[in-house]
Image (cartoon, rainbow, N blue to C red; front, side, top):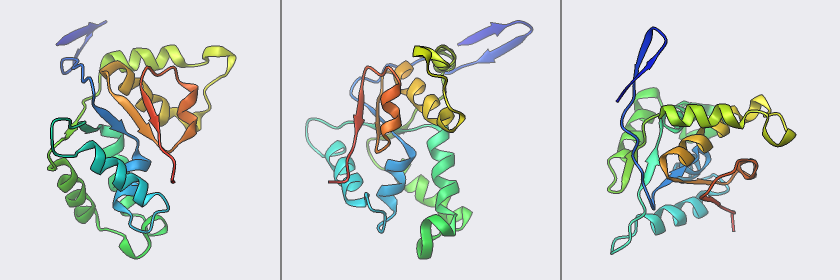
Length: 169
């Protein structure tokens, strides 16, 4: 689809409604790969349940923000300790996840950008800049029909139709 905006023409992948799919937050992907992460077991359990073989597989989606964030954090010694990765190694881990059956990629949508703009300063609470990426993930999940999954309670502030807030236990 091509959208005209002034003198610019913006190309956007067609919106895909993904009922039953999940958009895990970066903290879920990082906990899954970080065996020493305090939420590793819960993230592993969530992913195994989602991608269970049988009749019901809940597809999991990366997006540009979670892909870039995961690769960046896997290369940070302060985050990963002894398990720190080189950039090619981190990208290979990402590709390994992406090549897993049931894991896909949700492209950015113009409708998410419009929704994000509508959420700025809603309900009398201005959006703190530290939540900008969270707001984007929430808007992308909402506009693409995905359930947002995170350990982060800050997502409660967004009016999501579908979300799952994981706990460590």
